[in-house]
Length: 262
Image 1 (cartoon, rainbow, N blue to C red):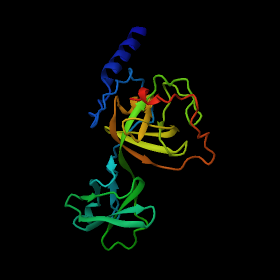
Image 2 (cartoon, rainbow, N blue to C red):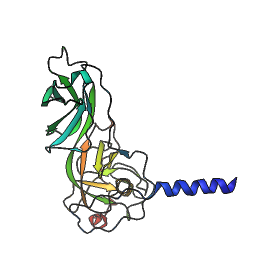
Image 3 (cartoon, rainbow, N blue to C red):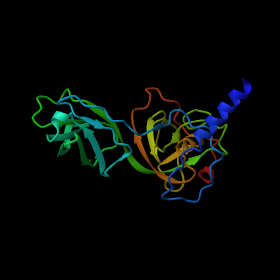
Image 4 (cartoon, rainbow, N blue to C red):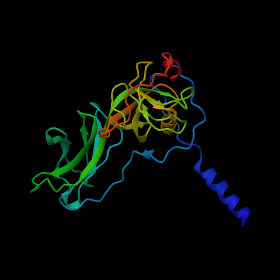
């Protein structure tokens, strides 16, 4: 029995294979490679969505992955077979003005449709599709989508483990989070890189080198497959807790801390 169990484990390990390779950094500032990565946190999820068969008169939108601010993204969807050929309007729920038209097209003979959409604001949004002449759009199915801002990011960790972050945590190799110069501690942030999505919180202040907007903890960088200075998608997806931790940078951080940032 032990031999059979050991053989099964070996087969599973071989089937898993190596993890996905990160895309090449668009702007590598020559940072050191990250240490051997730890297992990716379960918070990392694939940014994909499957098709849902729509009901008559109720088109559905498939969630687009990696939508970037002010960059054209292709939004696809389906209508019921009987609605093929009808005009479809894709609408986006704007946080300030409510639902507004994003683009219109006609459903193909197979029921599929596709439009081009250029997001105008970052963060979490809702998309829906409405058929021409529909009695009401309020009951239309909605699809969540995160719109990311393209930002430069670095990572840090070695030399800071065991120290207290600006938000009151003790930094450890397994700590997930990001540093930002102004966002309140605890602000939820969603990151997108090389097809991976990770939700973390602001836990520290920085970065202070390479003109970066975000400084990822070592565990966060490893989970996303990042080993240097990169451009990634980032979006603030909520508000910080009502009573965040101490937001004052600790005095023990040396003035030369940027040298340890990657």
